[in-house]
Length: 277
Image (cartoon, rainbow, N blue to C red; front, side):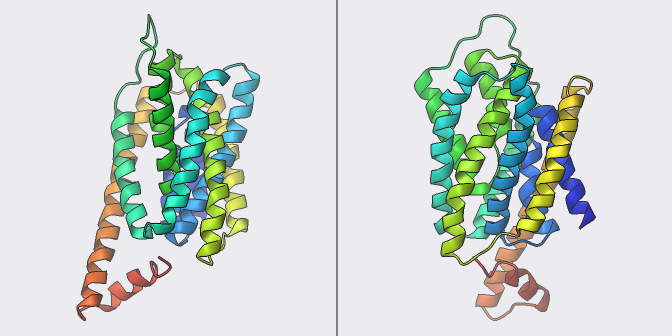
């Protein structure tokens, strides 16, 4: 249990440092670390990520680093997309969600391995309708698999509006917060339909540790080499994504064995963990 809560603090620190990255660890911690069913883990992730990002954004907003016009242009379509992704999750099996989640982790690793785009000099602004489409797409991803999408949002903010990295990181926190909480609200209906309940005690502790971590991360953001940090997180993402794919593909194989009457005893245990889907 303590390892899972240590992970919660790391989630917050990463959000405070980078405006991205840490939230993508939340679903694996809730599902594999704390044993929550897939859809509960996704819903809980939206709550934790939204809460931690909102609190982390407050001091950034007070310091004048949030670009509210850009946040609205990207964030409002993102909220709509997140609600749509959460609604779509009704018909997506939990194992498929986790498989997609692992692929998203690999994509995040690619983005984090790359050096952030420089904002010095003139920047060709992205067409507004394209920004809206970007927001919708990242929002759907947020609602479906429970990630904040900061690893996509931060580079987009630098490229579309020429924001420098600290402004992009701060603005990303606002966008992540509002679309994650919008998706979480929709997910309540999904869980009610499936007769599933959240573990509010665990989520409360998880969110509190994440908030503390985010405040620490915000203080450290000017002192820690960002490139080395991003690449270190990227390496962790690759390892976790491969592990998730291995577990989920193994579970799918075991399900096939069960259908053919050849399932082993350990496989039955794995399948039982997915029985809510």
